[in-house]
Length: 215
Image (cartoon, rainbow, N blue to C red; front, side, top):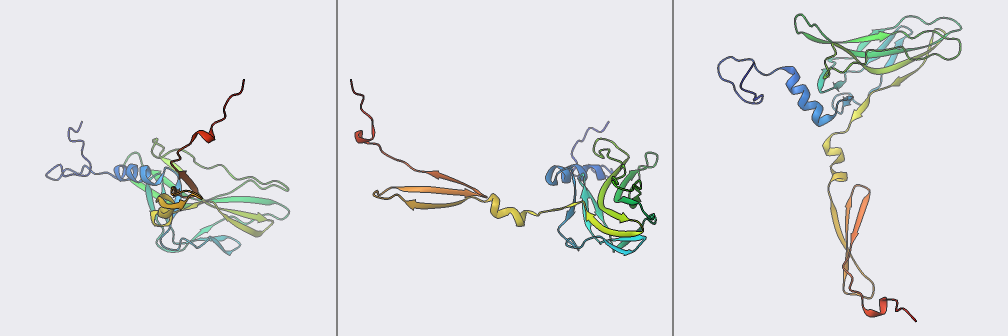
């Protein structure tokens, strides 16, 4: 067992001590353990139907449980044709897989076919294991393809956009101001953080403010 526990530091020589899981754990701690679209390239784009059998996934940057996924260019994912008189819901996922023998990690875009139904189609099952928890296969749902017969009626994006700090900084930064109290030389201090405003004032009460008991 290694005695030098430092990841972001040199162990000397050619010791390959930094692994992908180390960066992934740090990213997950900062960004969360869910799956997100990063607000970088093409983040405003949505999956589209190229034709009745191909769905185009944008060139997104994604992160899932701290692992970054880079889709270099718009990529078509093939789905099976629908059936007349039947509705269906397919899912397109980014599938993480670990080869436990070689240690190689990969991500592929996969279409998972739903079960046809005349009235109430449901999403198909997916691999829901936690990568951080040791799962060797895990799916990040990207979109749902809704079919009615052979027609694609709509495509629902299922992955949220991760808002960067520059977009939420104002909501995290306290803003302080003062308001003069009427009939007084005192001020009320107001502190706003996001949608929450806290008021602070120092008031001196005189005897006129107290209720005197009567007997």
